[in-house]
Image (cartoon, rainbow, N blue to C red; front, side, top):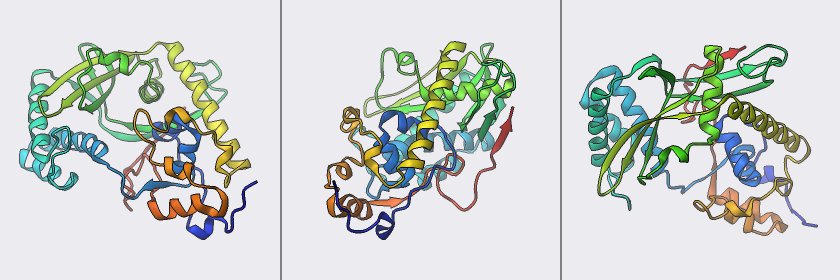
Amino acid sequence: MSSRILPMASYGLHAQLPASFDHQATGAMGECERMFYWRHILGRERSSQDRTALNWGKTMHTVSEVWETEKNPVLVQETIEKSLDENIEDKYGRTKGRMFEAFLKYAQFQATNPIEVLRTEQPTLLTCDSGTSCPYFDGGCGLTYGGRIDRVIRWQGMVGPLDIKTTVMDDQDPISEYRPSHQFQGYVWVVSHLMNDHSWGIIVDRIVTNKSKIDIKRFPVSFTRDNIREWVENEKALQARIHHLYETSPEDETAWIQNYFRCQKPWPCPFRDACLAPRDGGFRYKWLAQHTVERRWDFRNPDGDEVTTPTTEVNV
């Protein structure tokens, strides 16, 4: 039995439920309960975390929106300057200049592969109550879930969410990477309820950027009704377990199961050293206090700014 000298609050640590559930939250729970606990219950993030990949993808989304609304390359360059860190090349050759090259190629791609935008990006929190008919269950889903859907578009006769994915690897079969996908199936669930009909799937603009090339492809990723029904059941089970563990063990990380297969792959868990530290004497609390900062995730306000992006909240 471990002996902790001081409660976690003495180290500036506080347990609370996430403000909402989206792919970042329950997706992390699906990967590893302990990782979810550190990140989303205690709200911690590594203070020295390498955010290159995150910032690169987020910036590409932002410059795409700037270009769509303003059609001004100068504003695009200013956005890149503000959004990315110092212009130091990472091991994949990504720099601010490379980002602008990728943007120019993507703008050309969009011009030659036009889409019709039906709905622009906006955070959406959707509740499908039990007892009401919906596209997937006669008695409703009994679920609340949300996310930031880039855009809903029409392309080649297909209507669905468009998602921009940035990567450094050029897989020969990229569609298989997203089937199944907790994130994409959640998008389909939300859009299907907004449309009051099953949405066939999602459209992906995939931008590969590395030292040797910039390559862009657009392709559809489809999901059946049964795929989405099973996603709903899994999501409900994940959320129910989160609530149960929070009610019974808000300050005991050992109740949140550690998935040893996730500690190192596909990339090292940022909280691995916390799990390796002794529980006695509050060493895990000390490690978290020294190496992490409080930054609670909310998809409606991903930067933690005081001004929150307007959110569409829908009850069906």
